[in-house]
Length: 399
Length: 206
Image (cartoon, rainbow over all chains, first blue to last red; front, side):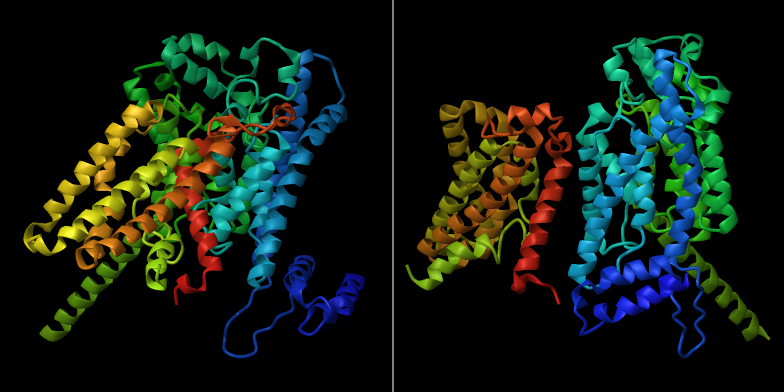
């Protein structure tokens, strides 16, 4: 640490005003504060500056995602080798997945950070921290077979159009990682959905395609084919598999256990709002029960709790809906926001014939509505307090 | 051509662009820009309608009773639009099919009514004609830029001819399906506005 401090102090003058690399000061500042907690102290007034700044907070979210990431890597290898039913050691399986997933992470970070740094230099402000999380989220929500250049294009789109045009981290309306996914989903649908994209090596193997479809894919297919639920149920993974995550899906979304660990980290450290997480799950359950009550087709008959185990519902609820920038800011608003996100996700899943998964669209939609929810919560509060003031003054006048 | 008249032609291209600055005529800009050819035809049609209707209204502006001026303007525009529609149907039928209802909807294009009300009603015919040409080009320019990127990135072609080489597809390149969807037109227009405003000092809002 001392060595690090000394090196940074040594080169610092070059980057300060008047130094050789004055133009790169934003870049330097970003690295300095990333490596070491800044020692800034408030000079006057009573503002308390916690050393737990945004960089530390973002790093915590990344830590919370690590279980999902590691399991995702393992699952990529596991699914790949299950195609050929060879027996492999744990490290061979994990190594295969690691080599598949790591390039996606590198591409996502390099593209996103390059753009962030460029913008920071042009605008002369500090480099925003937000991309630390976004860069890790993007690899976790894409299928393993995605082309790397698509990841790069989507990341660039998300960072520029989703974030920088609004003024950078903290100003964006939509969750940047989901913007990237939505871009991929609409731009290159063949590479984002279907039954061939989830398992690495599926295309080359030329196997029976049905083994590669996700649970949601099977269910969606059953609607136009008018299959009975009992027939579809045979194709669905067991609950324990879906919970542990040995099912096809986007890289980080499959294991609910890993996501649960991440959720506990987020809730324990206070970075993610437990209100949003709980209300999202509750909203999903309620919608599931409502659809169960109608049971017009096989998809509607799916037991509500299974909705929470399949697809990206859990991942979205824990890591995406809780994004402190794009979620509701008011405490009451968080309940409404989460509840509606959960409901909409299941509604889109079941009733929309084009999209097998609704979590992405539900969160993006509620991102747009979050400011509106907050506005009415604040207004209601103002009104309530005004009424109280009036009542109090009436009482005082009587006395 | 005096410098004042020259300004009438060039101002709508940049400082007073109908789409990017006045934000008029957006709907058609989104609808007809999937491919370059319909966008070009649309740009030309609107330019013709706007220039001629400006000319006609400016010539009779002193005889129009102010209380019924809108309906008079509409009659002129509608007549011209029907003429344009018939010409398109006769000579470029396939494009006319693609543009479908949007040719008829030129009548409701805000740019045309806007120029008639704001310019042709109070200016001489020749100036009005130039103003119409300028605004038509300003509108058409944006349409063509948007359509250029949408067709290039969305279908890999320009004016229907494939320009992105087959070898690139072999490497794994794919056309961007989102470019064909209307939201991307809006985003493209947004990017053009962004670029324009960061280059043009006059447009920076205080």
